[in-house]
Length: 286
Image (cartoon, rainbow, N blue to C red; front, side):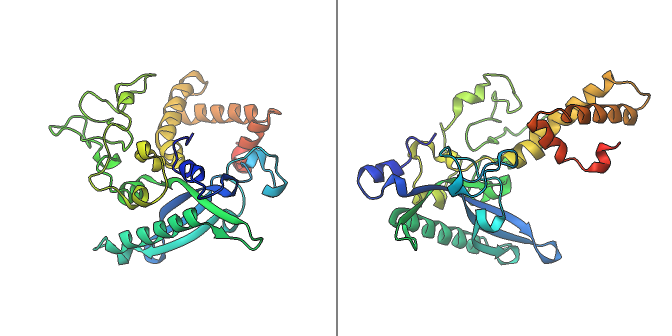
């Protein structure tokens, strides 16, 4: 998936050994602190871990040779904070924000190239695969001129959209970003034009894939799918499905859908059981 990553060039030049390289992601998010003010938190997290809740593996050293994703485990074991900054310190002046990003990125760059000596004596190289975060963080930290912020606010607009995606030109004239077909026109525009006027510190300093700079900035599935298009799709589907159910009101028909869903999840299939375990008991009884 990252065949052109610069780490392979460094390994070919004997600057590091791939057996000592470990893939990591930078993650940024603005949480809420006292008086509901913002606080930017930057952390580093491994791309490899103990799997998901449905296939939890236990301690990584006891796991099978096949790598798994890093979705379970205590945050103290899986996420490592690198820096934090109160919004009040960069609300009026973005320079502290940029300074913190550069400090963190330079530190990671040095660690990835020179390595970190562990207590065992082994040399550990954390190799950055990308920067993760929600859309506000990605758009701000990467200086994006094409992002969700350009989405038209009305059904029709006299001003042409400049693009809503940092990976392609979706949103521009004749490139409808709501086209969900198998082969939308915007699919032919991936990485044809940078999504920024000033390249961010990430790809200026860190190892990456030079021909795929945009892909260093990873789309956050939770905000994009769970809280985004997936949420809208699920709600729209339920609206159509409830018309097939008995009941004189939407509430009655939705209760029938819920009951059928619970019955479906009670099947012996482990995936369905996992879904069922996340539903509060009081809702299962309804």
